[in-house]
Amino acid sequence: MNVSQCFPCKTNTFLDSIQLLTFKLASRIAVASPNGTLIATVHQSRLILRSSTTGDICQNFQLPQDFPEKCRYVRWYKGYSFKTTVPEIQHKGKTERVLLANDDTVLIYSAKDAQWKAEITGASSNLGSIANIDFGYTPDEVLVFSDFRVKVTIWSLITNRGVEIRDPKTIVNGYDYRLQSGHLAVLTRAAAHDTVMLLDPGSYDLSKNFDLPTVEAQGLKWSTDGRWLAIWDAASSGYKVLIYTADGHLFKTYMGGQDAHNIGLGVKSLSWGPTAGLLAIGDYNGHVTLLNTNTVSLIMHFFLAFADSITVVFNRCVRAFATDITFSGHCVARAN
Image (cartoon, rainbow, N blue to C red; front, side, top):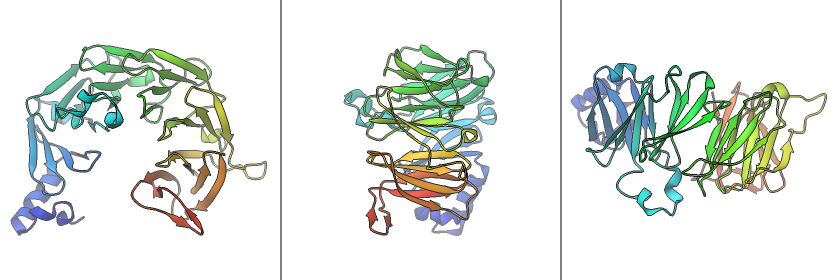
């Protein structure tokens, strides 16, 4: 990629281009913020936050000794609580926070307040190293997954305490927040069956849990309007997507129209449309299926000849047209 495509305002001279290219090559980790305005990079012994449009340095933080070499994760706060009614979450730069983590220590910084910093030591509770990490529903919460899927700990930066959830099923697709209320859905497997736990926001007390009729559930996702929770099963069980109501009742099971002669390779990923009226499902056959979520009926089915497998995402800004059908979002099939 041409450097000028990333920093158009800072590449007017050959020297500027060389400096930016050198910086990019020297930066081991670079992660863009959710709105695309900032880029966080770990460069030598510092965390540097740069503007994505000009390349200017917005913040520059000195990291502890030996931390950059062991840094494994850089995560931005996703802005789950942008729609919340709690005003203090919306102010003081809390929504533009970034965290870094190595095997056992988490550092959190603010893009708006250079003086603010938080640190969590012993984050994995001596259960190996950190297997995955992310912000919670608010920027004052941090989710830490321990090795071997023993537990996930939700740390509060306000109380300095953690809430433990035992036996998470997966550290990537096995948890999701309901945007409207902040309820956390976690996929767990303590015994011989999969279970979904619905946890209250803030306290993370158990609101409800229910067992799943799955062989080996792979992930879950809340719909954008918070009415539905979609769960997909392992490819070994065939093509299977379960749609639950927000209070944990099974609404529909979609099997992809399979029969004894058309089994398929199973579901790889799924994504809700911007208005939750559509559900896009990608499978290991390279197909994308669009469902009407009100009736859980097929709208469209197409094949991607260039992809062995696909990941489906929705883009709010563009409309997709297929024959005489207009969708409220743009379905993008991304080859892996």
